[in-house]
Length: 335
Image 1: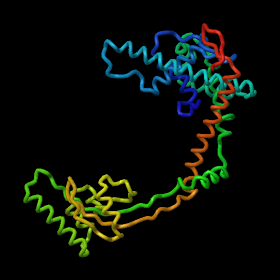
Image 2 (image 1 turned 180 degrees about the vertical axis):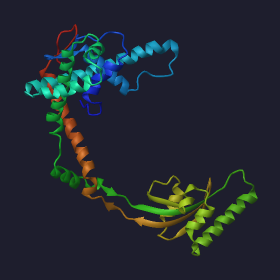
Image 3 (image 1 turned 120 degrees about the vertical axis):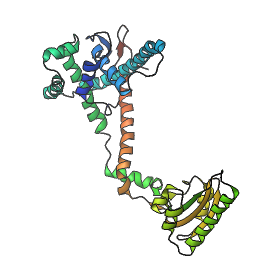
Image 4 (image 1 turned 45 degrees about the horizontal axis):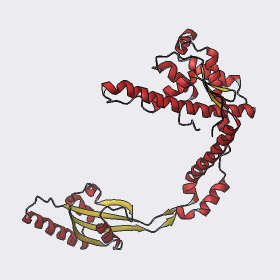
C-alpha cells in the first residue's frame, strides 16, 4: 500500500468533514477489524470521499433517469475500494504494535491542530464530526500516523539503494543505456495540391529542380528553405533537429537521407504531398550513456522494485498473522 500520492493526513481527514455529501451521519461503528485494529465508519466515510474526489467525483452527462443509479453504483465501488485500503492500512498499524513502534503525542497534536485551524471553534468542529467523539478523530489520526511510520520504517527505508547497487546494475545492463545513432538535416518542402492544374504542378517541379541546383552550387540552404518551403520548419531554415533512424514517417525520405554524407543534398523527391529536398548536416554515432547521466533513473527503478517486493512479502506475512473480520461476520484470514 502506498499513500504517498494522496493528500496529507490532516487534509485526508478534513475532506469528509468539510465536503461529505452522504445523508447518513458518521458514527463510531466498526465496519471491519484486522486483529485488534478497528476500521471505523468514520474512517470509511473520509477515505471514500477522498477517493471520490481523486477520481473526479460522479460522472457527468448521465441521463436523468440513470443519474441516481449511476451515483449509487459509483459510490458503492468507491466505498469498496476505500474499505480495502483501510484494511491494508490496519495491517500496517497491527504490525506497528507488534514491533513496538511509537507515535508521540506531539505528532498527534500537530495533526489535530491542523484540523482545528480549519474551524472557528471546537463546537464548529464537533458539528462537522456529526456525533463522532473528538477522541475518535484523535484515534483515527493516531492510526494513520502509525501506518505512515510503519511504511517509512519497514518499506521506504529498507528499499533505499546504495551506490554500489546502482553501479552493479549499470554494469550488468550497460546495453540498455546506449544513445542511438542520430542525424540532423535541413529540408525544403514544396506542397503540391492535387487540385492544381498540370501546368501548375509542372511549375512546382521546375522550382524544386532549380532549388536543388542552387543548393548544390553553394546557395544558402537556410535562405532557400526560409523563402520557398511550405513547412513550418522554414522559420529555422528547414532544420529538423536531431532524430533517430526509424523516426521519420516517410520511410523513402528517410532512406534517401540516410544514404547521404554530411553536407550532401538529395532531391527533389516526390511523394503524395509534394516535393522534398534534403540536406544531411550532422551525424552523431551511437554512444554509451554514462552512469552519471542515468544514476537517478536507475536508483528510482531499483527502489520501486525493491519496495514492491518488500511490500508484497510483508503483506503476505501480515495477512497470515492477523485475522480480518467484517461487521456481522466471523473473523477469517484472507486466502
